[in-house]
Image (cartoon, rainbow, N blue to C red; front, top):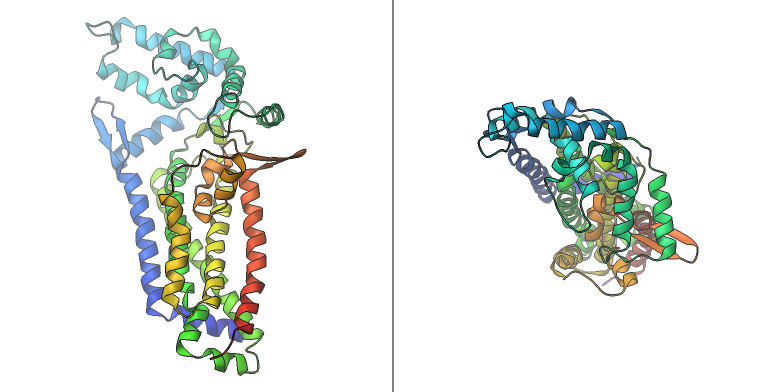
Length: 412
């Protein structure tokens, strides 16, 4: 790192706003993790509800015992096991149903497998919690064919971007066929919880980045130090480059802190298991052939690029505005205002354009595991890859534009 970059980095870090922003960011990430931890609930062995750490420990114990490939044979065996438990005279109460106590003792431990079986056999557009009770165990041998039928039904509905064109249906059929089967079942609750509040982590991080970078150029205008900078030996080139590099380093550092604190806290409590599981264990209908860990990489990459884009847009605004406060207001509005907009049900390309706003890129899990694709001629570009490419291009364009704007502004 060169001397000028270190100097600009120290200027940012020594501000009271940096310490306050860092404390706020860490505090919010811890809070978001703790809300997920304390919100856990499951049925204990004595049929009473367990909450928080106790619920997490029991679910981890149950689901670790279920780890392994979800073969059609295993699906059939699970259906038969469930029906045997439900019909066993020892477990049935006077109403002819399994008693709550026996459900808690013998049946609830298989709930992860049941949750993967039920949605595949639901009637279209319906939810039937008791469908496994009425199935023939041999139906489980067609598990993956039935899943493809559910995918096909989804592609023919008005959900998401549907109904999809024949070419898009063929594209997603091919994508689903490329998914390795049988799915690898593991205890994935830790990663599932990580994905839950990641959009909020990125949102808070982006806002903190915007606040800290707002004075980078506008602060120089306000203090009238811009004249000194631009008339100095390295003011037109090296110093501006140092400001941009320091800003990116700070942005990356804040992202690293927020993601590390949030992810590690949840995984330490829930367990690190599940990284090698198929992402379909979390989102059964997902068309991507990724493991949970690979999906996390894409989600973190997309959200981080969106945060960096917010930072670079803030720098560009800072190079054009004379007040850091104005920069914060405008940058904050660009991030938050889309939250207040109603859902877009209009032209499909308008929706794609709206999804290029940073806020809509923070929810990377739904983008990576969803059925959103940009179809141009014979090209099919999954929306999450389009978003990532857009961020990289926008950042690459805005950085030199910001440098040139500050360099060429009129000194007062």
